Amino acid sequence: MTYRPDIDGLRAVAVLSVVAYHADAALVPGGFVGVDVFFVISGFLITSLLVQSLGDGSFTFSAFYARRLRRLVPSLVVMLAAAAVAGWAWLFSAELVQLGAHIASSAVFVTNFVLWGEAGYFDRAAEDKPLLHLWSLGVEEQFYLVWPLLLWLTWRRAQPLAILGSVAVLSFAANIATIHWSPAAAFYWPTSRFWELAIGGVVACLPPRMRPVTHAARLREAWAWTGALLLAAGFLLLDGDAAFPGWWALLPVAGTAGVIAAGPDAWLNRAVLSRRTVVVVGLISYPLYLWHWPLLTFGRMLAGGRLPASATVALVGAAFLLAWLSYALLERPLRHRPSRWVVPSLASALVCAGACGLALRADGGAMSRPLPADVQALADFSYRPESVYRERVCYLLPDQPPSAFAPECTETAPPDRPLVLLWGASHAAHLTPGLKQLQSQTPFRLAQFTGTRCPPLLDIDTPTQPHCQDVNRMVLEALPRLRPHTVLLAARWRLYPLDTLERTVKAIRQATDARIVVVGPVPHWDARLPRVLVTYATQHPHQPIPTRLEFGLVSYTWDFERTVRDAVTRTGAQYASAIDAMCTRRGGCLTQVPEGAEHLTAWDEAHLTASGSIHLVSQLRSAILPAQ
Image (cartoon, rainbow, N blue to C red; front, side, top):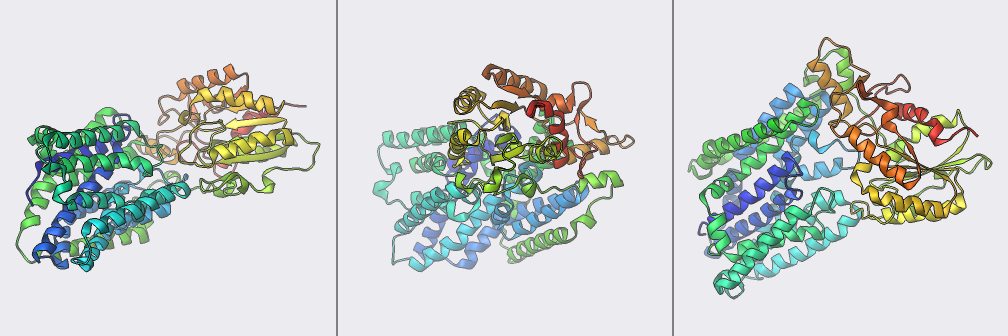
């Protein structure tokens, strides 16, 4: 193959978008689609090599996989070893056990399946998984377990273009079908991603008469600029809330295919993507991708949450430095070294990395660093909200339609007691323990209609919760029949447009004369509250763990609370301030309460424990259900 510097330039665009997105999503809201750009590039290059070697009779499976080992393993093994050392030095037992599992799965390229198994709304945050980004490496290598064998078996019997087209169509259909019932599966499963690599292969196998590069310059330029515009649309129009991959993935995939198909002589490819500085970034794109996410993740975990801009810039700079060193000292020398010991040594190193991961997974708790007893208790803190929230019963998951609400979600006896109807997303569900406790003091009936990422707002688009609008319509239609005394609305309001709240309140008023109470935002921390407290304790070793803390609170706490209060006031509904109940401007917000078994008020960044819920609802008692 003739070397194309513009493809290295395209790699640079892909990796820079991913790094920018991970450093600060506001920089490139759709920067995560850079991974899809990599998939298409990889499909194009590897298919080109396979077709060439099969055509001239030089193809062997051993040579193909030896080449893959030389390309992927040197930087990967070093990064995994560094992550293991950093995890042993800085992580707590549960985090270290999970890191070990991810190291082991990365060594055999199945991290995407492990992450899919962990996925869920209450999964540990992405920022707590230093090897999360290696899911894409798993998808890519799973494709290359199948594609060379399929191409070899059908060579001279079927056109590669027809095979790739069939793979692309079937995989894309699986992607569209899967996104509706399991967004996590659509994101991580290879069956939902193979079409992206296959599209790159399709471009590689286009016959000469169909290649823009062989046509007039105007056609080449049209392909290049159309591809660039599609890529730009993906980077700027998408964000982390998009139902992805789904149909949206066509933007980066078609865009990348268009740029590659335009060929190296298109002006954009020749004058922009082939510039030396851009190509250099493309050459180190793989190790840069490997290094940037662990550095940012460990930095955020050590800081107890959000990093200052200066620290983020420093860590990204360190990623560039490590990427260049990996490329210059490992990748480039080992990729072409003729020694017959290189491939066995790399395979052995990968096995050792996997064994190290299994050891951490098996005994990570014993390997984690010792801490004072009170700090260790925080480091080991775990919480399972599923039963507390009544998951799959009265708290629906994205795959459940409104008919899945169980009869017990609406208490019917004794019928003379007032009914409090709880409606909203997880930030409504986490009020359930407090409301249950309040029932023992002030008798009332409770109805719970809550769902993952399903705010009590009518007619808003919730791509990650396909049944949400149906759920909300069902609740609204049930109000005249249920005749509640109080309708309690709660959600993580920052994620949704508050201008829809007034329309929702108006619709509720038309359906019932019940009181409408909107619960404002709860305290939101930069990281999981247990980690925030451990970070504070390690930075202030001679101070007791505080029951109130300003350290680690998100910067917009007070301003956003005022925004929600004003929006609710305009609707005429009653506002119940969780911030007033749990925080003071000078002392910060509650981290621990004496009530309940957990004592901590939150178990992650913003979801209450049962203890936190009981405390908050007791403080909001008069707003929720005033004395009759």
